[in-house]
Amino acid sequence: MKVIRSVKEMTATSRELRNAGKITALVPTMGYFHEGHLSLMDKARELADKVIVSLFVNPIQFGPTEDLATYPRDEKRDLSLAQMRGVDYMFIPTAGEMYGSGFQTSIEVSQLSKGLCGASRPGHFRGVATVVAKLFNITRPHKAIFGQKDFQQLLVIKRMVKDLNMDVEIISHPIVREPDGLAMSSRNTYLSFEERKSALSLHSALKLAEHMIESGQNNSGIVAGKIEEHIEAHPHTKIDYVFIGDPDTLEPVNEIKAPVVIALAVFVGSTRLIDNAVVYP
Ligand code: PAF
Image (cartoon, rainbow, N blue to C red; front, side, top):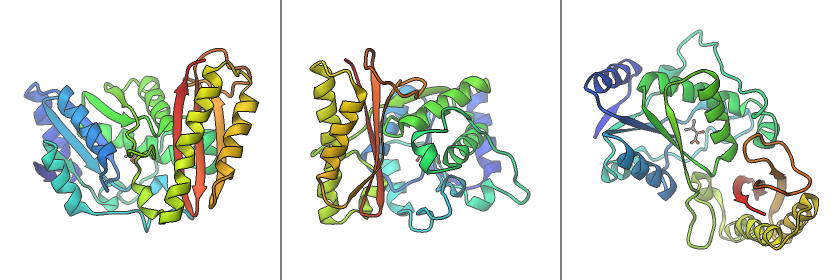
């Protein structure tokens, strides 16, 4: 596995890979790998001749009061995990390398970025779209793999690729969960023992809602109410949003007649967790 830290070298390498006719897949990450990241790498390995993983904690997608400084990092461990999963190239730029002096361009996927996480994290998806576009330009992948846990992010990226005619296929991969149902996230390491127990309420609330909808409940307000009641019954929780809506447009839905995405963001202690499920009536 080759570790590349400069944009210039990564750009030259991706050009060589393309010229040699290799199919490449990119897995963009912010590091601190868990089984969710590793399953994206496995998928990339399955689909491409060469797998590139980027590891970059992107400062421009964090708000001023968010956890950029404390975001968990362990490059040595990440490198050995990626190597074990058969990754060919790790691209690990510094912030200075990615955003040189005078940097001033950004990409805004306006509608899809507005609600849900976009409402509580202003500028977040602008930062995500901008860095992902840069990573695509630097690594020139044929395919890029994203997890469905960041459901809104996935839609934002797909829209950007379509709107800007980017020549990359976006592949989505299912949420990977701990055996007890908690969606894997690097931020789970922030949770205390008691908070981790309460964090399970996100998945159990989604299961409850799925059961209600599958049993014929089609009023999204009633389903959302039950989700809130369930989560709030667990200590240390504070709901940011409960959203039920169209899984393609993220428009809210009142009467559930077609598949909906149920997306949640909940503070457990000071850790903000997200989870979602697409449910079929
Ligand atoms: O999902 C993430 O880890 C990040 O948002 C991404 C896509 C790597 C961009 O920084």
